[in-house]
Image (cartoon, rainbow, N blue to C red; front, side, top):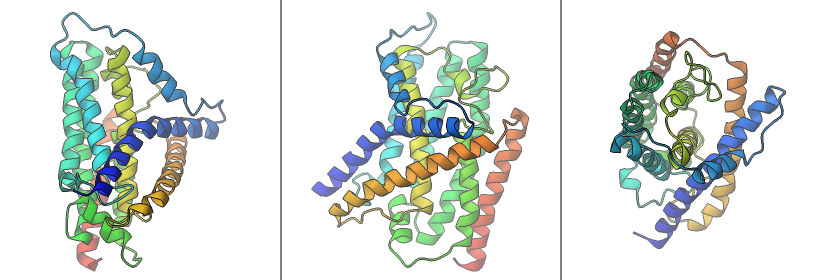
Length: 315
């Protein structure tokens, strides 16, 4: 385990934790601009977190230890997921754990705990949101796995580090299968991060909300951790998209100084991706909840088509 590897791993985790709320603020700001509304401050998510951390946590009398532990578990899962995705360098001590299946497993573990915590208190909203969240996850995870497998066919490995090294450090080639996988990944990203058209992160209408319904009983530091984890999840998904489809600029394992250029490149990619995400939400309308299975089935079908195209064309 080299010193440069430890530094790059620590930098990835620190940048993820620190920059995740900034990415959320950037998306909210772009969305407001595109909708011709007064845009909130770029630092608004940090102010919200600061306010919540300084408030007292109110917990229901019948809440179990699971309800209290879930925010910490979810935050830890999202931090680990952000840390194993190679965004600055491929020299990562956590590289052996950076497997596509393990990554999806981390997202699934966080979903299970937040859903169980939502049902723990026994409120109608929490149970409704948990059921909807599990429905979305049940349909989105196979599509995400198919997207990751499309990239793994090119590198011959399900390791994210190997995928990035293969795609970033070889001659430029056009992979038709990745085009289908890219569209499928975009659909999954919107669904998994409670964005329009699957969910609306700014609404509290009982017939439409999914994520917000599960966290209504949380307050104080618990709610702060959950909101921070939601920002980390968006950051992690954005980094997965960058690693799979725009991996150029990631430093090689034996070039630690290249991280000086990798950090600005990552910031630029996230800024462009955040603007495109806001644009997609602006031109989309919130769909009815019973149309979500069709939406995610389309994502899975596109990902499978990407796999078949690669197998048929050999690239």
